[in-house]
Length: 360
Image (cartoon, rainbow, N blue to C red; front, side, top):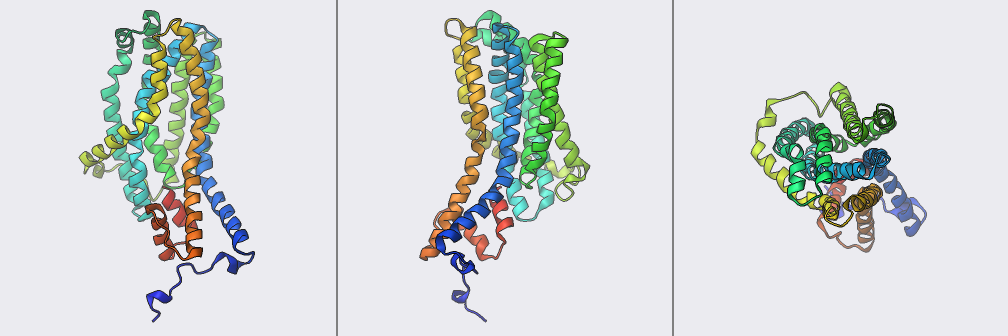
């Protein structure tokens, strides 16, 4: 029997495959980066498309008038955006739990975690519903202009169904992402986006529903995307991870609430900062024009910046390069991220499956 010291950490070094050290590294970086793009590319495209829907609705609202554009901006960016930021953070708890379940091959637990997340987020959505219903008086009480507060409050009522759509689609998107099925969300949003543009034009220009038509089109488009993802998950697209609704979803729900709440508080502030700026702009002179300008800039900027989700995948690639150099120099790859990868390499996991489980 071979001693543990005789077992090589890496079965084949890059220079043994030909091409020397640097060309070998370049080849390996290219191979790993292509694998990362399989995950990061569809994820970035999905985020860009969802933000693009809001940009389209906001653009149509801008053709109606300054007040309508400001009202839509406040309703979509501040009122709906604050709950969206909190839901994004709470749904991120799915990444940790589903990633662990997928890596441990406990596939059925992913469906349980999805149901628990739905229960928690829908419960929070019910608690946050008054912020939509009473948004007009609330904005006025906080010192916003009366006409802007009244119009924004009316638009917020048309975005109330979208509030509950968030609670469904965000955990569902994490559920599919942990299975390397980002392409499902990308294809769905790509199909829904032109429908959203057509629906917005019909409701705003043809039926002359104004800013309320833009808000309705946005809600309907997100609903269609959610229906598409649910059809895939429930229709046999996830046979190992989705086995139907189960009473196990109510087990350990308290611990799941704690994890979701902590994740929500941790991440929501990152999403809230520019929405708070839009809200504060309502206090300046000529508030309608100021809110219009800042909301358009922040929306377009955030649409481009949403592609920053690629950064965490490229950070993983840099970790892999760190491991490669450490292995060449005979040094241990320090850091929890590198250690996690190193453990999988020691256990003989193939680079494809170990990488994807790690990214989740």
